[in-house]
Length: 241
Image (cartoon, rainbow, N blue to C red; front, side, top):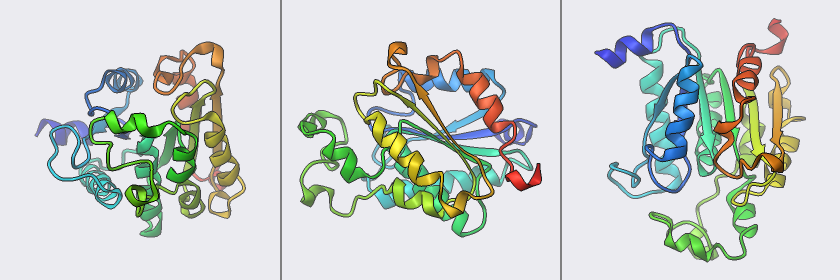
């Protein structure tokens, strides 16, 4: 009951799709939730199948379905409040898969935020010649490396953005050691001229290496509240202004 009432109260909602290591309760994730909560957003996060305390085995299709299910659960309870989708790292792949489907069925979210995104999983894997280290991450042995283990896993952000019609914000630190900065910029350069975004804004915010935000500390930026306020404050289609 409390959740139902809270989601129906007049606050925007962010569905947060996390990256590969750990769970929805990971330290840097909780710190971001706190920042977003302090700015007046409800934050809903969950663990995909096979992560945390969620049963099942990870797969791209399954993770995307899980995200779709949670989005629909939120929409059924959130009244007219805006619902934004925030993906981080591997979660950006889930996010663009999800939002592409939402746009295709004509129920887009109010905006999409991609933090430290890649273009597609092949290019991300290629940028890690020593990606064998990922074999030691929990739940990660199924993921990278040779074509056999990665067959059927695309997480094609670069393809998906051509089918997405909602405001898009990309955040990326120049010193990101996990997903190279140039992949985030490349994704922006694909999205920005895309016909699908012609009525929506597409914004890329880089964070200078000197700040030391790397792959998962953008939440520490004192600029983040202003960036979100300015971006989400008018994320409606531009022709409505």
